[in-house]
Amino acid sequence: MNPASLIPAVTPIPVHWAWIDTLLVLTFTVHILLMNALFGGGVIALFNSTKEREPLARALSSRLPTVLALVINFGVAPLLFLQTNYGIFDYTSSVFMGGWWLAVIPFLLLAYYALYVYDFRYSGMRAGRPATLVLALLFLFFIGFMFSNNMTLMLRPEAWPDYFTAPDGLLLNLKDPTLYPRFLHFMTGALAVGGLFAALVGRCARLGRAVETGMKWFVRGTVINLFLGLWFLMALPREIMLQFMGGSLWATGTLLASLCGAGLILYLGVKRSLLPAVLTTALTVLLMAVTRHFVRAFFLAPYFSTQDIPSTGQYSPMLLFLAALAAVLGVSGWMISLYIKVERRP
Image (cartoon, rainbow, N blue to C red; front, side):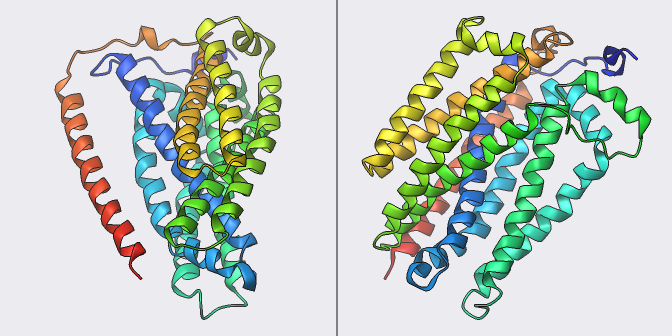
């Protein structure tokens, strides 16, 4: 079977494709930073739940449910932008792995509930506290693995015919050599960003050595992630890997800029320069999101190009969205500032 015959026809979108791609990368950057803070912060809370380090774990526990709410809300936008430009691939892969994909919702609710239990009953369930947090982290780990499966399966139309040998909606992309380094690259990055999150929480709560603890996680997670990133690069098909080694000026430049950013955040992490490390990490994650976007474009190049998507030129919905986004960001910033003020009260 010709995999191209399984790809749905391209339909017009309201605005030029470049607007959607730009918003996709920007909103994904925010979402992945929050996701990293959530999962990495949870892991750090688990490892710091011993008696002498319990204040940091307690401080993190009260913030994890809020961060999960932000992860969910800021995850909607990039998913919708992805479906706007790449829906003919994303919808198809979602159907092929439909059973697993639908399971994400109940697992997300269970993770949410477990984090609330961990927070609200923190003091009264000393024995069950680690088990509750481990359960929440396992649910989040499963969700991340399903997302990695879907995001890689959509790039592999040549793997889609496997569905017809077992049309049960349980197709996974386990044969893809990029799946495991890609997934581990994201999850290890979560430990690094989670370290920054823990350091920020420790500074706001004035928790002694919490900043040092968080920055250690940040540095060590970044070092390990550099090796996983190299594995991910080497696992790419040769023709795509070469695009990042001089074949494409923009792709190569973005990758090199990401590596320079990683070197700088390592330096800032060792120096314990918290706020500069936060800003540099956000910029580096943005560059990595652009690199990831190039990977998607190179994978889909034999079948599809966003430049071929027709536009109807209806920009009024886009302007309404941008106005609503600006209002929401303003209100969210105000709410966060109030939250920080309350947290700093003795």
